[in-house]
Length: 121
Image (cartoon, rainbow, N blue to C red; front, side, top):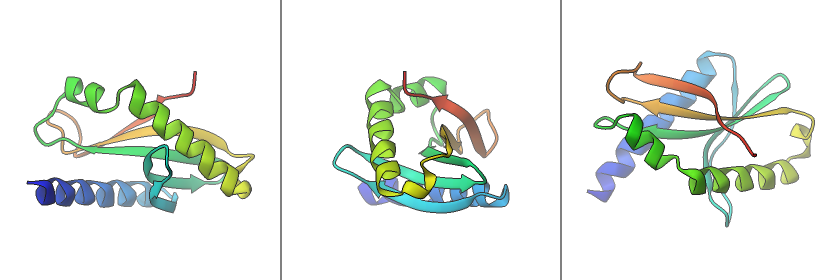
């Protein structure tokens, strides 16, 4: 069960990384971990850096997504992004965006991008 979830999640992250790459983004990091949390994918293009949370939800819906990407999860991603930016100063003047990429959720595209899914308030 856990191995299946990991395999499905890894597959979704690979598809999301390809989705960004096809749109001209450079994949900067994957599964970037800090003690605060983890960022699934970090991509950059020109003066933009994107911290993306990937959710593979073959049996999910909008409510499932909202539950999975709750305020606590968002806060952890934001704190991890701050840590990344402190360590990688070349991105310090970049525009920062937080996306959600939903993979295989019924009713939307197979790889569905939600740009600016959340931000630091």
